[in-house]
Amino acid sequence: MSTSRWRGVIALATLMLAQAHASLALHQPRCEEIVIPMCRGIGYNLTSFPNALDHDTQEEAGLEVHQYWPLVEIKCSADLKFFLCSVYTPICIEDYAKPLPACRSVCERARAGCAPLMQKYVDTGRYITATPPRRPARTSCPEAICHAHTPWWLTTTDNNLISSDAI
Image 1 (cartoon, rainbow, N blue to C red):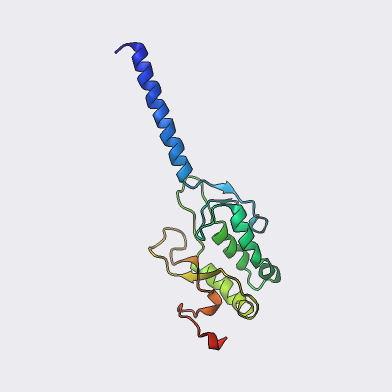
Image 2 (tube, rainbow, N blue to C red; image 1 turned 45 degrees about the vertical axis):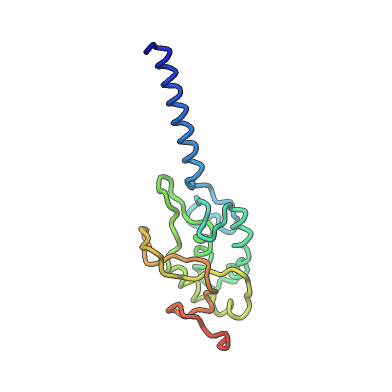
């Protein structure tokens, strides 16, 4: 092959590699700086989306997480703010492909402090509960992650539902 033909083949191969790289970059979550006011300055500053609640952007997550601001302000649990932020803006570490989920123990401490108030005053359409993971997570807190499910103030510690008559 002539030199100009090789250059054309190399240019085409380079273009194809660049296209493939750009396509992969669009489908993999990348870390981004946290902009949700409630979740800034909580010990980490990078997050990625979509989160476990299927929010695609921080704007979506921010609108929902701020409904819990009154509970954060009254300090019903020292862990509530960190827990909520770790669910709505999961920790992202550069060069690590997956976001780090909230630990079950953090969820349970937040629930223990805030459940009495939640039972009495809050009626929202989306709730956080501690549930066992579908498969073991490889994080520093492998015992469980937190997801949106049944209201956590309507479950017992063994995740059985409390009768609505008991409330």
